Length: 317
Picture (tube, rainbow, N blue to C red):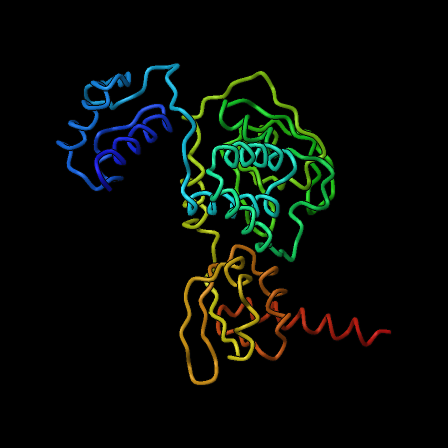
């Protein structure tokens, strides 16, 4: 990257964040700190209002904006893929904003790049087995994003999964997770006085309260995930799958806590960390005689009982 391109990239980077450290720019552009200082000085001398704070970082004076940014074909193509994925893995409240942003991006593309992106659009489709949160008529993802950023309490009208009961919950949201083909809100529930996982498709109503909460009282979403992974409630399970069955596991093994695997003669030995043994045993039942449980013994017992119940059920009619 020549210096002119790098100066433009540094200016774009400065405008993309509230504050940027010299070390961050050095790491991103693979240059020395001395080069960063020279480049920032050059921007300042050219009329760009760069404000430097000792020991803190650099920021651009509020109100200063670059003219429309020119995207490369590769960057525009990457954004197109993001839009296609957004159609499958977000709800309508986010899709509208994403497509609006994409139209603005296309507006600043050069004519050849516009033709390139339009042509590529016709040749890319994302096929999903599931429609995310298809059983929910409401669209709450955008509203929950606002609650998380502004640290505001939300009130949920929520239908539980097990008892099918409907409750009112006041929740301090700490983050959003996407797993099991659905979005989930993680937050501190005032009703249960503990952290809870709320699936968006089970939300019957969401109200953004004008009540702020202290985010320092909660872990970040990454810290929360690590706590769950390291939790004492996880059980190790060792399972052997016939080789002809393994190809059908695909992403399902990751959703069920897959950790590692070892190829044996005619089987693949897999290790899982499982939080719900009964659910895990039901998943294994899908592969009938193509799977063998090595440990724990409790899981073997569950699988045997489940198989006997299934057999008795089908013999009864």
